[in-house]
View 1: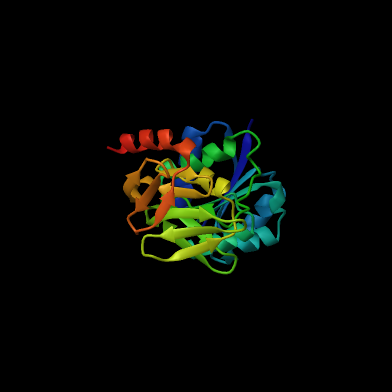
View 2: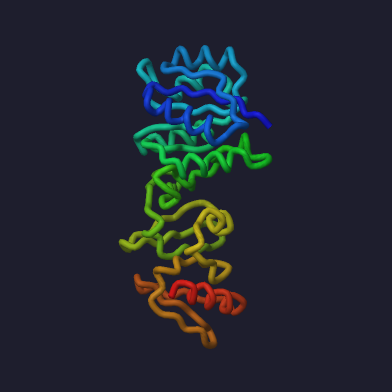
Length: 245
């Protein structure tokens, strides 16, 4: 399937980098046009049918959000490109598929493209405010309680606990965030060094200080927290911990 892509970017070096990577690595992507301003970008999107839009946030005559206000963003998948993290929340509000921080790294662009080209994922937006940020790596997360948001390094997350309505994310500095999400959704976003040891608990394996596998097994984390281990998880947890040695 051919994806028709447009690039709206006033950094010519950044534009040329995107063009080069897409042309060299993604033959299924056809570049239908580029623009450097809001006005030219709006004209481009109204003239050319676009499936995938790479959109810079800060343009000389406005911003990328202005482009979306004057077009039909539901008709294409938007990937924002910017050098500033503080636009992440606004990008999510505009149903961006992804958010790439400059300078864009090849691995991160490839990760975004892999997700885009997956079957039935072309129009999937970042609907949940607990979203993985790209491209600096998949080593950071944007966590939100619905009112305030915070970008955290995944290495800061020690333990995630669930109750009936909320998730509690315990961080290395001793602070705690309360977010409205499910443990299953969080588990799917986290890398392999996180492990669900119990139906209500996910821990970072590197944060484990002590393990008791006997009756009523539990973990002691570096921050002093005690976390129960479900009986059916003990064998898998042993294998995962052995793999870290």
